Structures are given as C-alpha cells and as structure tokens.
Amino acid sequence: MRRTRVILSLLLALVLLCPSAPALAASDFNPADALSGKTQALQLLSTCAFRSEYGNASEGQTLTRWEDEITIWVGGSATKDDLATLDQFIMDLSFRVPSLPVIRRVKRDTDAAIRIWYVPFAQMQYYVEGYIDDNWGFFHYEANHGSITSARIAIASDITDQQERNHLLLEEIVGSLGLPNDHNVFSDSIIYQQWTTVQSLSEVDWLMLNMLYSPVTSPGMTWAQTGAALRQWMGLQ
Image (cartoon, rainbow, N blue to C red; front, side):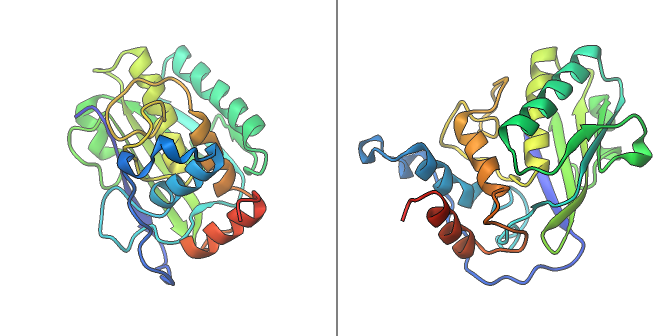
C-alpha cells in the first residue's frame, strides 16, 4: 500500500479521563441529515485527533498539539519543488490557522523541531522511529503532557513522482500537527485512509486544524471536554 502511517510516542503517560473516542466511517455521515461543515468536522475530529492509526485503543485519547514555535528543517534529496511545496504550505498554515504557533523553515537541523528527510525507500526505517514496512511516507512525534515537542518525517525519494511527494509531505505534516489518524469519509481530505494524490487540504481538514488549535482547546483535554468546548465556541449547542 502506498500510504502513510504513524506511531505516537508519548514521553510521559497521559491520564485517560474518558472512554475511547468513537471511530467513524462513511456510513456515519448521512447527507440527508444536512449537517453543517462545522458539525461534520467536529465529528471527524474525534477520530482523527483522539485515536491513533497504530497501537492500542488507549492511545490518542487526549488532545495533543504544538504549543511552542514549530521550526522545520529539510534534509536528504529534497528537490526545489519539494521545498517550494513546503514553503507554500507553511504560508497557507500561517494564514488559514491563525491560532497555530509560529511555523517556519530553518537552515540548520539543530534549530528544528520537525526534521523532514527525503531518502531512498529502503532506508526510511533508519530515519523515523517505529517505521512500518511498505509506507512511502511516515512520521513519528513525541509529546509531553499533550504538548508535541518534536517530530520526524521520512518520504521515499526514489520511487515517487513529484505529485506523490507533494501529497505525502502535506499528509505527514498534518499528522505531525496533531491529526495522527486517517479516516474513511471524505476522499478529498489529505488524511483520507485510501491512497490518493490529493494536492491540497480539504475544507474539513482546515476546519479540524482550526478546532485543534482553537483558543478554547488545550493539550490534555479529553474528547468530552473538547467536544463540549468547541460546540459552545462555534454555536453548535
């Protein structure tokens, strides 16, 4: 499968205060319900932010996100187009997610919180902890009490074309920002479970990121707390 995967590694154990957030499927979204985009995104957030794609069901049950500046460094065989895609995405994130911490690219890996490596497919396992075989893109992040402190991303450089690399870059960064789980609902989403080469985030993706980094949410909140706060904030009560 030409898909991305994620393993979460928490530096300190999170205290779990609520049952697992429900997993959602396409059948859970009935067009006849005429749900607003905000309501759809809020429902999907419970799957994408509060569950992990790998590991046991207890992982990902509290909100996890960045609180400090997000600095990004790129290594390996990144092309000019790879860097241009990253720079444009950084600009888009800064503009479309106003509450996101400052995010910028740096020239030295020692200054970076997120390190992105473009490396041969056969070498990806050496760059990202917990790498799962056969994935063209993979990320791993570390968090302390719900605050993400660092992340590593690897993208296969030798078996991908530019369109595939662009997609993988966006998907891995979105996962590293705190949406670690894929879903099987909207095929235009950058974190849709099936393999696609979507080149931009969907409106639902942007809504979920804004909810994740909203002023009424914070690291360590349970899904029950997060859902209640966001419904009130967005007037969905």
